[in-house]
Image 1 (cartoon, one colour):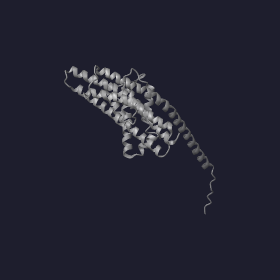
Image 2 (cartoon, rainbow, N blue to C red):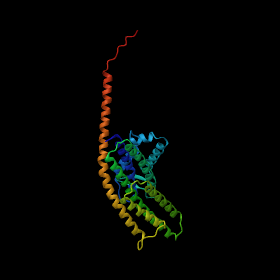
Image 3 (cartoon, rainbow, N blue to C red):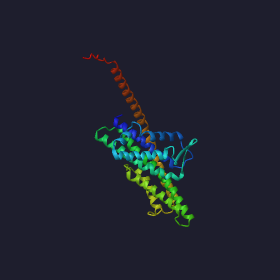
Image 4 (cartoon, rainbow, N blue to C red):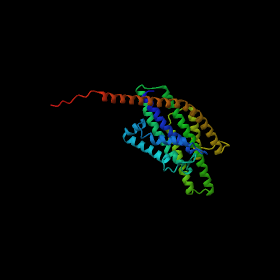
Length: 300
């Protein structure tokens, strides 16, 4: 694997931890504690170790400092020991349902910023004729898989908040009280996150655009800018949207894993071999120095 390819795979690895943190926005009975610890370890420690990510953060001035702060805020709020959003409890991870929207607000902008860093390295490898097809494939699949995860998690949370808002409005006979205003603000944050996902996408294939447009249209129906289809209610429209997104998610997840898994293994193997070689060279240099003859100091 070429050096620039190892850098890109390393950055994709870190960004996958950010992407997979969106799982905590989905209602589940149980979350894998081991995978939580795996994500926590990578997100907290990767920027501190001698990694391509740390090198980028340390050598890109103000932009590097800004990204570093985003990563630290993300790590502290979600995975820090004092996190109020996620906490390990027994054999599962408990999620504060009242702060689910905050997970999107942290994860989606950060993922897009890291995507921008990956694209910089992608441009570099192309300009320097250091292109490996397996990396090109990984980047295309990583882009699609992230969009699928984002659409799936956003659609479910948007629909849940929309139902909550309508329930509150019915209970108050159409008066928008403090609780309804709070949920409305949450919906606005979720729609803004959806816009970020939409605007920063580089994939233009129909398998992505179909679920994207379906969710976009649903949001327009919620905002009153588009009529519901004849004879359908919001639940029926959402069921159709969810089906399209799930189909896209299943296909892209499988393809991404098949591409990513062997590449991360290859990167780890390459790094281990390079580290062993560097240590051997260092040891050889030290031995040569120790065995070198010392010139006798005869004085004057």
